[in-house]
Length: 307
Image (cartoon, rainbow, N blue to C red; front, side, top):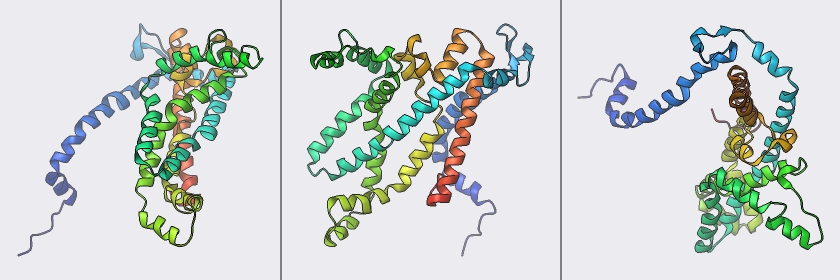
């Protein structure tokens, strides 16, 4: 005798797997409490917020904060710095983890492969406070090892962290040193999921190591590369706030001040909460739009997308 099909298959599936759904509760609670509940505070971007009157008692001023934002000279400088630093990071740093993963995949000796992986992962576990302090010492004009080497070859000391010509390069290099190895994990995992028989078949056809990389490895992880690139594009206005905040100083504001540090300086330094919230809301809205656009163009051009 066959059992009658349930009229509510989704409800039946939840009842059967209730223990798995219970595991979702802490994660959902975290999202609701720390990600969605604070969204209510965005309303102060449309108010002349007074900390003593609170959100309920502050005056509504519409889009005045956004008008001030888009007509501010500082905003133009900050946007230029944000876009340039993000563009440098995407162009120069995004391919690095892919190259690391591909090269490690070609290493035959497992002990060497694991040793290299461990060494390049380690910087990720250092906080930006430690990394910034490390590079401040390394790049110091008087005691830094880099300037000692420059002077050994006859050059003069270079104030890397106080020179607008070098500051963006320092930001990109330090970000790459800290995160390139860690970001390679995803691509290493993607390569590990490729079918080994593809490589065996390629060898039988006479393909060399380089040909296998370009004909099997890179096409095999193309969807992962596209996914990570879309996510990276979505954060293009997040150029590394914590990193830059710890590395920069007023001397390099013209080249290093980005949206995140600008929000921090204006919001907490000048206590202009409504204006800094408007800047933050603009940053989030642009990031969301970029994710949608990147996903759309990826689907149109490659047939692969996040959704």
